[in-house]
Length: 446
View 1: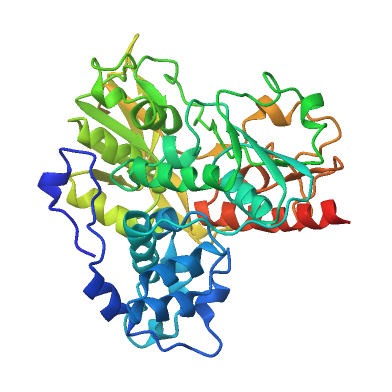
View 2: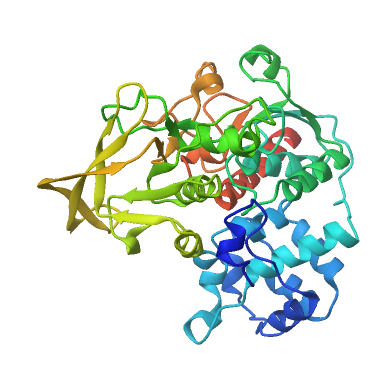
């Protein structure tokens, strides 16, 4: 897919890549070998029949391709944009070792976009069962669970604490990677299927645990919205943000339009972002679009970035400075941020992840001038609801401990996505939610 020029796109929040044309999609789909034992399907956490939908695109039957995808995935336009296909379906493509793997993500996005524009269609729902299920959280896990349960005929009510549904898809991922109208269209499909979505409802407070227990089953998909901080001096200063807060202000509360909107964000002329994952890249690229010079500080080497290679490449093109093999030790300032003090790191023996362990180099500190600092070093489950569930077992990082089918230790309560697994990808959250929804369906029918 073609990208918009960096010097143009860095001035706005419009989507970076332009997608495939019908001719390009058909040509790309025609490369598929239609393997008898397709590894791509094994690599897909939600089990889409990838060869089947690609075959329909090759034949020009774009609506049928979209229908095949929607049997297993309520968010195809989302997944086609943000899934790490290179390590999942495309990573298992038989062509990977010989030439270039099929652009499965691009084809999924094409089919979903074509359907949304030309021929929107609703998946079929089963005969009503009379069973009522509550879904807490409207991120990728909650949306997937609601879809799978409604498809099987259950009465589904979804609770979302914010004023828009979508969770991390709305507040965490910038529009230049995932346009909000794309997310909203997929959520609207769920509403059209009959899922009730109650906004501004904080489960555990405005919706009590006793009220949740009146449902026949409950799915918890509240994600990982509690940001982690490094615990270094200066984090209390004005101008220090978690990536979660920074992106929420810009994505969901339109702080990029301040003072047109009433939600400000401190607009630094020199911003330091700490971290090396996709969230760090998102925060850095958003700050760049707000007019700042941005330095991204990461304690390892570039080849060790957890972020997708495409996001790293886009950040480079847009002028993000990478400060590698360095780690912040102190944020400077009296009331507001004036700089970030860092120390050089050297790579030593591999750690449990297989990457070299970074170790500080003595007497190697240096200063980066900054008036804003964004920490993007991970997040965990928000305890507002889940700590109010008596009888639920929790892991060391605050996650809900579940069985392989998503069952918690509290009867009738299931969980999936980041609240159970810890922070991961959109598609992995969807896969675990789909698994839990199927278990809920069996539980209700038995």
